[in-house]
Length: 260
Image 1: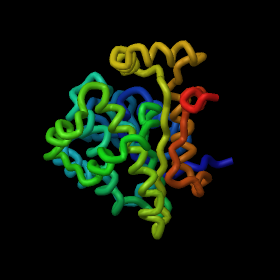
Image 2: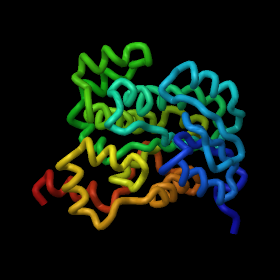
Image 3: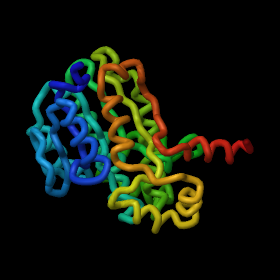
Image 4: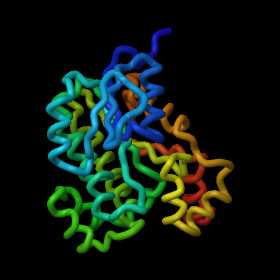
């Protein structure tokens, strides 16, 4: 039986390590032509590889010019952890991701799938409507002022970037419906990647609670398989969804929050 991704061209950002590397490798193993993108050199070769900074508009513009047309899938996985400067986190995790996606849409094939890597950290999006609404038109040049105005600093930058990304995904559930292009998000819990220590360092007691409740951290492969499914045509009726992939942590937090 042929793989549903065989012959498709898929762009994977953040492909040098962690979930991005696992996704690029798995999708390639399923017969896709993978275009890997990262700010760091990519050790595992794929069909094509590009170095680009998703936090820099000009770098994205250069990348768009180099990428081919007729792309069937985009996996937006590149991201910075909460230990990095707040402005940088917002630029890479939110503004750059959105800008890359919007600029790439003309090069996407009809029926293409966009998958955004959100996070369990974004689950509280409904309680941050004002700042998320204000970020709708945020660009690279005004990020610092935005962070100051909305008190986005430290670990809050990471939480906010994922909250806003989830909302943006849901809002764009039908934006490109006339071309059959769909968008979904995945929200992992703690995953055993090179930046896991950054989350443990930043989140403190919250992270320790998560570790006590969970049977194990996730692995990049756990998430890569779900990303691959959302990239495939078989998941075509899933649109604007934010799917937890977290060993049950999302359900645990919701039950605690609502007293169950």
